[in-house]
Structures are given as C-alpha cells and as structure tokens.
Image (cartoon, rainbow, N blue to C red):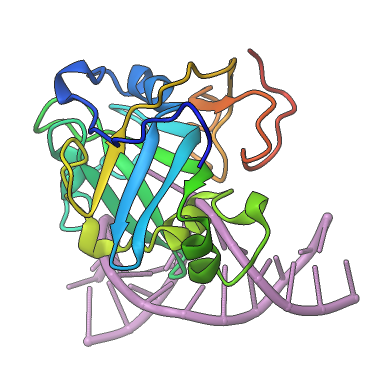
Length: 205
DNA sequence: AGTGCGATTGACT
DNA sequence: GTCAATCGCACTA
C-alpha cells in the first residue's frame, strides 16, 4: 500500500463525473479501482484509459443497444464488461447520460492493495505485469460478465475511488487494437508510469 | 441456423 | 518480431 492514496476507498461522486466521454477518460486517470473479493480488497490506480465516444465506429454502441452492450447506455459511472477474443474480459465505465451509448475502457492499473491476491489470480509474480493491459487487469481483479452493469459510484463488489495524491502529467495518443476511427487521439495515460501498456511513441503531452 | 470477427494475450521463431 | 487460441455475439439469410 503506497502512501497518499485513499485508504477509505470512498466512491467517486456521480455528480462530479464529467458527462462527456473524452473528459471522463481523462478524469479517470489517477483514480482508483477497488474490487472486493472474499479473499480481501484488491485495488489499483488507473494509469491508462481510452474513450469510445458517441458516433464512434470503433465503439460497441455504434449500431445501437444490444444484449451485450446495454450497460454502455446506463447513466455514467456504471460498469460495462465484455469478453474480447473469447479470452479476456474488458472493464469499461459508462459515460454520458442514460440512453446514450458510450464509455471509457480501463486499460491498465498500477497495483496498490491486495498484490498477493492479484499475483494468485494472474499466476505470475512480476508487479509490472499484473494489470498492464485491459485483459490482465480484469483477470487480476477477477472481473467478468457478472459485474456488467455494476454501479461504480457506490461500495459493492466493484467501485471507483479517489486518490489522495495529484496525478502526474497525462499523455494523449491513438487508441490501441482498433481498425475503425483509429486516427482519433482518444487514449490517455500517465507519463513515465511503468504500468502503462503498449507503445508511448507518437504520443504527445 | 450458419458464419465471421474482434477495444487481447501468451507462446514461440 | 509472428501467430494461434477461443467464444459470445452481431450480422446475414
């Protein structure tokens, strides 16, 4: 447990969450994801996000509401969890107002609490690799479709909390692993943070 | 009812 | 660096 972060783990206030998807993606950098498991509390600082905005051809809500993506249409601050490539779960935070389908993908965490639990869930030891990537962080926190639709603004199995310390410089760049609308700079990350996934070149502050 | 495809990862050359 | 695994789901018919 590092000094300076929110030991109470009080949930973020929904009223304070930016409604706009891109603004929310930036806002969530430096915040804490808290997961309550039978074995104990697991948490990590968000160091990388991606915005999937309204009208975004790369977004799952692009063609309207379906059984899979309905949580994207919830009021901002709810979890949208889906299975990618049949192998990895992805954690997103719904954005905008109820009925608007958009969200923010959480791509990487800096592990804070419950590191031994994460190491067990991931089957590896190395701190840097525990939650460096969207599928990895979901595995480390035991997140799956059962958490789809969870209110992240109240304590429960999964929620978002504030960090005591100010985040460092935030970089912005291209989203990873998409083919449509790939030219938009909708990825945000903490500069000089070793827990960020992917390449940092061709990005700007 | 059948088909194609990922907002990835880990193993391997 | 390359590449297969794996499956729920959206799309076509």
